Image 1: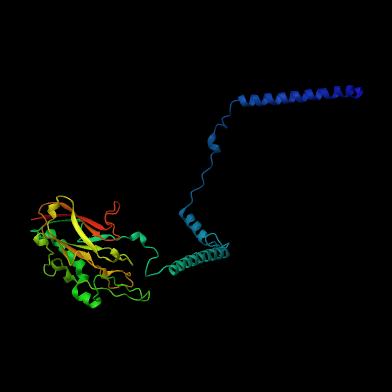
Image 2: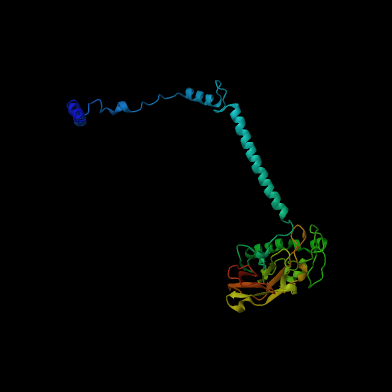
Length: 333
Protein backbone atom coordinates (compact mmCIF):
# COMPACT_ATOMS: atom_id res chain seq x y z
CA UNK A 1 0.00 0.00 0.00
CA UNK A 2 2.77 2.38 0.88
CA UNK A 3 4.65 1.49 -2.26
CA UNK A 4 1.69 2.19 -4.50
CA UNK A 5 1.10 5.59 -2.93
CA UNK A 6 4.77 6.45 -3.19
CA UNK A 7 5.11 5.64 -6.89
CA UNK A 8 1.76 7.19 -7.98
CA UNK A 9 2.15 10.63 -6.40
CA UNK A 10 5.01 11.96 -8.57
CA UNK A 11 3.01 11.34 -11.78
CA UNK A 12 -0.34 12.78 -10.68
CA UNK A 13 0.81 15.92 -8.88
CA UNK A 14 2.12 17.83 -11.96
CA UNK A 15 -1.16 17.16 -13.81
CA UNK A 16 -3.14 18.94 -11.09
CA UNK A 17 -0.77 21.87 -11.29
CA UNK A 18 -1.22 22.12 -15.02
CA UNK A 19 -5.00 22.13 -14.68
CA UNK A 20 -4.78 24.81 -12.08
CA UNK A 21 -2.53 26.99 -14.19
CA UNK A 22 -4.75 26.46 -17.26
CA UNK A 23 -7.83 27.54 -15.35
CA UNK A 24 -6.05 30.63 -14.10
CA UNK A 25 -5.03 31.53 -17.65
CA UNK A 26 -8.62 31.25 -18.88
CA UNK A 27 -9.90 33.48 -16.09
CA UNK A 28 -7.22 36.07 -16.84
CA UNK A 29 -8.17 36.07 -20.52
CA UNK A 30 -11.85 36.58 -19.67
CA UNK A 31 -10.99 39.51 -17.41
CA UNK A 32 -8.88 41.07 -20.15
CA UNK A 33 -11.71 40.60 -22.66
CA UNK A 34 -14.16 42.36 -20.34
CA UNK A 35 -11.90 45.39 -20.00
CA UNK A 36 -11.07 45.65 -23.70
CA UNK A 37 -12.92 48.46 -25.55
CA UNK A 38 -15.65 47.53 -28.07
CA UNK A 39 -14.80 47.67 -31.73
CA UNK A 40 -16.47 50.24 -33.96
CA UNK A 41 -18.40 47.53 -35.76
CA UNK A 42 -19.89 46.35 -32.49
CA UNK A 43 -21.14 49.88 -31.78
CA UNK A 44 -22.99 50.06 -35.09
CA UNK A 45 -26.46 49.11 -33.88
CA UNK A 46 -28.10 49.84 -37.20
CA UNK A 47 -26.98 46.52 -38.59
CA UNK A 48 -28.77 44.71 -35.74
CA UNK A 49 -32.13 46.35 -36.48
CA UNK A 50 -34.78 44.34 -38.25
CA UNK A 51 -34.93 45.22 -41.87
CA UNK A 52 -38.35 46.61 -42.88
CA UNK A 53 -40.41 44.52 -45.20
CA UNK A 54 -40.87 45.91 -48.66
CA UNK A 55 -44.13 47.83 -49.11
CA UNK A 56 -46.81 45.85 -50.83
CA UNK A 57 -48.66 47.39 -53.71
CA UNK A 58 -52.43 47.74 -53.86
CA UNK A 59 -52.59 45.01 -56.47
CA UNK A 60 -50.73 42.61 -54.18
CA UNK A 61 -53.07 43.40 -51.28
CA UNK A 62 -56.09 42.75 -53.46
CA UNK A 63 -54.57 39.43 -54.52
CA UNK A 64 -54.07 38.52 -50.85
CA UNK A 65 -57.72 39.24 -50.12
CA UNK A 66 -58.82 37.17 -53.10
CA UNK A 67 -56.61 34.31 -51.99
CA UNK A 68 -58.07 34.53 -48.48
CA UNK A 69 -61.61 34.46 -49.79
CA UNK A 70 -60.95 31.59 -52.17
CA UNK A 71 -57.72 29.64 -52.40
CA UNK A 72 -57.84 27.69 -55.65
CA UNK A 73 -54.79 25.60 -54.75
CA UNK A 74 -56.22 24.22 -51.48
CA UNK A 75 -59.93 24.72 -52.30
CA UNK A 76 -60.43 26.72 -49.09
CA UNK A 77 -62.91 29.49 -48.47
CA UNK A 78 -61.76 32.06 -45.90
CA UNK A 79 -59.07 29.71 -44.67
CA UNK A 80 -61.35 26.70 -44.18
CA UNK A 81 -62.22 23.73 -46.29
CA UNK A 82 -65.76 22.71 -47.14
CA UNK A 83 -65.72 19.96 -44.54
CA UNK A 84 -64.57 22.38 -41.84
CA UNK A 85 -67.33 24.86 -42.70
CA UNK A 86 -69.93 22.08 -42.71
CA UNK A 87 -68.92 20.94 -39.23
CA UNK A 88 -69.00 24.49 -37.87
CA UNK A 89 -72.43 25.22 -39.35
CA UNK A 90 -73.76 21.91 -38.07
CA UNK A 91 -72.45 22.63 -34.57
CA UNK A 92 -73.99 26.12 -34.34
CA UNK A 93 -77.27 24.96 -35.88
CA UNK A 94 -77.55 22.25 -33.22
CA UNK A 95 -76.57 24.71 -30.48
CA UNK A 96 -79.15 27.34 -31.40
CA UNK A 97 -81.85 24.75 -31.95
CA UNK A 98 -81.20 23.46 -28.46
CA UNK A 99 -81.32 26.98 -26.98
CA UNK A 100 -84.55 27.78 -28.86
CA UNK A 101 -86.13 24.53 -27.68
CA UNK A 102 -85.10 25.22 -24.08
CA UNK A 103 -86.49 28.77 -24.24
CA UNK A 104 -89.73 27.55 -25.80
CA UNK A 105 -90.07 24.87 -23.14
CA UNK A 106 -89.57 27.42 -20.35
CA UNK A 107 -92.17 29.76 -21.86
CA UNK A 108 -94.63 26.89 -22.28
CA UNK A 109 -94.24 25.87 -18.63
CA UNK A 110 -94.64 29.49 -17.53
CA UNK A 111 -97.79 30.11 -19.57
CA UNK A 112 -99.22 26.76 -18.52
CA UNK A 113 -98.72 27.52 -14.83
CA UNK A 114 -100.38 30.98 -14.78
CA UNK A 115 -103.91 32.09 -15.58
CA UNK A 116 -104.56 34.76 -18.24
CA UNK A 117 -107.58 35.99 -16.27
CA UNK A 118 -106.24 36.66 -12.79
CA UNK A 119 -102.77 37.03 -11.23
CA UNK A 120 -101.39 34.40 -8.91
CA UNK A 121 -100.44 37.04 -6.31
CA UNK A 122 -101.91 40.55 -6.07
CA UNK A 123 -101.60 41.41 -2.39
CA UNK A 124 -98.95 44.07 -3.10
CA UNK A 125 -101.46 46.33 -4.90
CA UNK A 126 -103.91 46.46 -2.00
CA UNK A 127 -105.34 48.72 -0.69
CA UNK A 128 -106.25 50.82 -3.75
CA UNK A 129 -104.83 54.13 -4.84
CA UNK A 130 -106.64 57.14 -6.23
CA UNK A 131 -106.36 59.20 -9.41
CA UNK A 132 -107.89 62.45 -10.62
CA UNK A 133 -108.83 64.36 -13.75
CA UNK A 134 -107.94 66.73 -15.26
CA UNK A 135 -104.32 65.63 -15.02
CA UNK A 136 -102.19 68.14 -16.90
CA UNK A 137 -98.71 69.40 -16.08
CA UNK A 138 -98.57 67.42 -12.87
CA UNK A 139 -101.06 67.88 -10.04
CA UNK A 140 -101.55 71.64 -10.46
CA UNK A 141 -104.76 73.42 -11.46
CA UNK A 142 -104.29 77.16 -11.94
CA UNK A 143 -106.36 79.45 -14.18
CA UNK A 144 -108.24 82.73 -14.44
CA UNK A 145 -111.99 82.46 -14.90
CA UNK A 146 -112.03 85.43 -17.30
CA UNK A 147 -109.20 84.03 -19.45
CA UNK A 148 -110.54 81.31 -21.73
CA UNK A 149 -107.09 80.17 -22.82
CA UNK A 150 -106.03 79.45 -19.23
CA UNK A 151 -108.83 76.93 -18.53
CA UNK A 152 -109.72 75.58 -21.99
CA UNK A 153 -107.16 72.76 -21.67
CA UNK A 154 -108.81 71.55 -18.46
CA UNK A 155 -112.26 71.45 -20.06
CA UNK A 156 -110.87 69.53 -23.05
CA UNK A 157 -109.23 67.00 -20.73
CA UNK A 158 -112.53 66.47 -18.91
CA UNK A 159 -114.33 65.88 -22.23
CA UNK A 160 -111.87 63.17 -23.24
CA UNK A 161 -112.05 61.53 -19.84
CA UNK A 162 -115.87 61.36 -19.78
CA UNK A 163 -116.43 60.30 -23.40
CA UNK A 164 -116.75 56.54 -22.53
CA UNK A 165 -119.41 57.49 -19.95
CA UNK A 166 -121.85 58.95 -22.48
CA UNK A 167 -125.40 57.82 -21.71
CA UNK A 168 -125.93 56.21 -25.11
CA UNK A 169 -122.73 54.19 -24.85
CA UNK A 170 -123.54 53.00 -21.34
CA UNK A 171 -127.09 51.97 -22.23
CA UNK A 172 -125.83 50.03 -25.24
CA UNK A 173 -122.98 48.16 -23.55
CA UNK A 174 -123.83 47.83 -19.85
CA UNK A 175 -126.76 46.88 -17.64
CA UNK A 176 -128.56 48.35 -14.65
CA UNK A 177 -127.51 46.87 -11.34
CA UNK A 178 -128.85 46.76 -7.80
CA UNK A 179 -127.29 49.41 -5.59
CA UNK A 180 -125.43 48.89 -2.30
CA UNK A 181 -124.47 45.28 -3.00
CA UNK A 182 -121.58 43.57 -4.73
CA UNK A 183 -122.24 42.31 -8.25
CA UNK A 184 -120.77 38.81 -7.89
CA UNK A 185 -120.32 36.71 -11.05
CA UNK A 186 -118.04 33.96 -9.75
CA UNK A 187 -120.48 31.22 -10.73
CA UNK A 188 -119.68 31.69 -14.43
CA UNK A 189 -116.90 29.88 -16.26
CA UNK A 190 -113.46 31.35 -15.81
CA UNK A 191 -113.23 32.48 -19.44
CA UNK A 192 -116.82 33.76 -19.68
CA UNK A 193 -117.36 37.47 -20.27
CA UNK A 194 -118.71 39.36 -17.27
CA UNK A 195 -121.43 41.99 -17.43
CA UNK A 196 -120.71 45.53 -16.31
CA UNK A 197 -122.92 48.03 -14.52
CA UNK A 198 -123.90 51.34 -16.06
CA UNK A 199 -122.33 54.59 -14.98
CA UNK A 200 -123.93 57.39 -16.96
CA UNK A 201 -122.34 60.74 -17.57
CA UNK A 202 -125.58 62.55 -16.77
CA UNK A 203 -125.36 61.33 -13.16
CA UNK A 204 -122.50 63.80 -12.59
CA UNK A 205 -124.91 66.76 -12.70
CA UNK A 206 -123.16 70.12 -12.99
CA UNK A 207 -119.83 68.33 -13.53
CA UNK A 208 -121.06 66.18 -16.44
CA UNK A 209 -120.32 68.79 -19.09
CA UNK A 210 -123.85 68.41 -20.47
CA UNK A 211 -125.43 71.48 -18.86
CA UNK A 212 -122.17 73.39 -18.58
CA UNK A 213 -119.63 72.39 -21.27
CA UNK A 214 -116.93 74.31 -19.40
CA UNK A 215 -117.28 72.24 -16.18
CA UNK A 216 -117.51 75.39 -14.05
CA UNK A 217 -114.07 76.69 -15.02
CA UNK A 218 -115.49 79.74 -16.79
CA UNK A 219 -117.36 80.63 -13.59
CA UNK A 220 -114.44 80.09 -11.22
CA UNK A 221 -116.11 76.98 -9.75
CA UNK A 222 -114.07 74.11 -11.22
CA UNK A 223 -114.93 70.41 -11.19
CA UNK A 224 -112.47 67.60 -10.47
CA UNK A 225 -113.10 63.90 -11.14
CA UNK A 226 -111.87 61.26 -8.68
CA UNK A 227 -111.51 57.56 -9.37
CA UNK A 228 -110.41 54.60 -7.28
CA UNK A 229 -107.82 52.39 -8.97
CA UNK A 230 -108.95 49.04 -10.31
CA UNK A 231 -107.83 45.94 -8.43
CA UNK A 232 -108.82 42.56 -9.79
CA UNK A 233 -111.16 40.72 -7.42
CA UNK A 234 -111.03 43.44 -4.75
CA UNK A 235 -114.11 44.07 -2.58
CA UNK A 236 -113.68 47.56 -1.10
CA UNK A 237 -115.24 48.58 2.18
CA UNK A 238 -115.94 45.02 3.38
CA UNK A 239 -119.64 45.35 2.59
CA UNK A 240 -119.95 49.10 3.18
CA UNK A 241 -119.45 51.78 0.50
CA UNK A 242 -116.16 53.70 0.49
CA UNK A 243 -116.74 57.44 0.77
CA UNK A 244 -114.66 60.43 -0.34
CA UNK A 245 -113.73 63.53 1.63
CA UNK A 246 -111.71 66.57 0.52
CA UNK A 247 -110.05 69.30 2.53
CA UNK A 248 -107.21 71.80 2.60
CA UNK A 249 -103.82 70.28 3.30
CA UNK A 250 -101.80 73.50 3.02
CA UNK A 251 -103.28 76.96 3.10
CA UNK A 252 -106.19 78.66 4.87
CA UNK A 253 -108.93 76.06 5.57
CA UNK A 254 -111.75 78.46 4.69
CA UNK A 255 -110.31 79.09 1.22
CA UNK A 256 -111.74 75.86 -0.21
CA UNK A 257 -115.32 77.00 0.36
CA UNK A 258 -118.35 74.81 -0.34
CA UNK A 259 -117.82 71.36 -1.87
CA UNK A 260 -120.44 69.56 -3.97
CA UNK A 261 -120.20 65.83 -4.81
CA UNK A 262 -121.83 64.10 -7.81
CA UNK A 263 -123.62 61.72 -7.98
CA UNK A 264 -122.71 61.01 -4.34
CA UNK A 265 -119.57 61.12 -2.24
CA UNK A 266 -119.32 57.30 -2.29
CA UNK A 267 -118.22 54.51 -4.62
CA UNK A 268 -121.20 52.18 -4.86
CA UNK A 269 -120.61 48.48 -4.18
CA UNK A 270 -122.37 47.37 -7.39
CA UNK A 271 -119.24 48.15 -9.45
CA UNK A 272 -117.19 45.55 -7.59
CA UNK A 273 -115.48 43.15 -7.89
CA UNK A 274 -113.55 43.86 -11.06
CA UNK A 275 -112.77 40.75 -13.15
CA UNK A 276 -110.04 42.08 -15.43
CA UNK A 277 -110.09 43.60 -18.90
CA UNK A 278 -110.25 40.23 -20.69
CA UNK A 279 -113.49 39.23 -18.97
CA UNK A 280 -114.88 42.63 -17.89
CA UNK A 281 -114.65 44.06 -21.40
CA UNK A 282 -117.08 46.98 -21.03
CA UNK A 283 -116.30 47.78 -17.40
CA UNK A 284 -116.61 51.47 -16.49
CA UNK A 285 -114.95 52.58 -13.28
CA UNK A 286 -117.23 54.64 -11.04
CA UNK A 287 -116.36 58.32 -10.69
CA UNK A 288 -116.96 60.89 -7.98
CA UNK A 289 -117.06 64.49 -9.18
CA UNK A 290 -116.14 67.28 -6.77
CA UNK A 291 -117.18 70.87 -7.51
CA UNK A 292 -115.43 73.69 -5.69
CA UNK A 293 -118.43 76.01 -5.59
CA UNK A 294 -117.02 78.61 -3.19
CA UNK A 295 -113.24 78.60 -3.62
CA UNK A 296 -111.55 81.91 -2.82
CA UNK A 297 -109.97 83.77 -5.69
CA UNK A 298 -106.23 84.43 -5.91
CA UNK A 299 -105.46 82.02 -3.07
CA UNK A 300 -103.04 79.15 -3.57
CA UNK A 301 -104.15 76.08 -1.64
CA UNK A 302 -103.21 72.42 -1.61
CA UNK A 303 -106.23 70.12 -1.59
CA UNK A 304 -106.21 66.50 -0.49
CA UNK A 305 -109.04 64.07 -1.25
CA UNK A 306 -109.13 60.78 0.63
CA UNK A 307 -110.84 57.41 0.47
CA UNK A 308 -112.45 56.37 3.75
CA UNK A 309 -113.65 52.88 4.58
CA UNK A 310 -112.79 49.49 6.02
CA UNK A 311 -109.38 48.26 4.88
CA UNK A 312 -108.46 51.61 3.29
CA UNK A 313 -105.10 53.27 4.00
CA UNK A 314 -104.99 56.99 3.18
CA UNK A 315 -102.03 58.25 5.21
CA UNK A 316 -99.08 56.28 3.84
CA UNK A 317 -95.78 58.17 4.36
CA UNK A 318 -94.16 56.47 1.34
CA UNK A 319 -96.96 56.44 -1.27
CA UNK A 320 -98.91 59.67 -1.63
CA UNK A 321 -101.37 58.08 -4.10
CA UNK A 322 -102.39 55.23 -1.79
CA UNK A 323 -105.94 55.97 -0.72
CA UNK A 324 -105.63 59.69 -1.48
CA UNK A 325 -104.66 62.26 -4.08
CA UNK A 326 -103.20 65.72 -3.51
CA UNK A 327 -103.26 68.64 -5.94
CA UNK A 328 -102.82 72.40 -5.83
CA UNK A 329 -105.63 74.76 -6.78
CA UNK A 330 -105.49 78.47 -7.55
CA UNK A 331 -108.37 80.31 -9.19
CA UNK A 332 -108.08 83.87 -10.39
CA UNK A 333 -110.82 86.26 -11.35
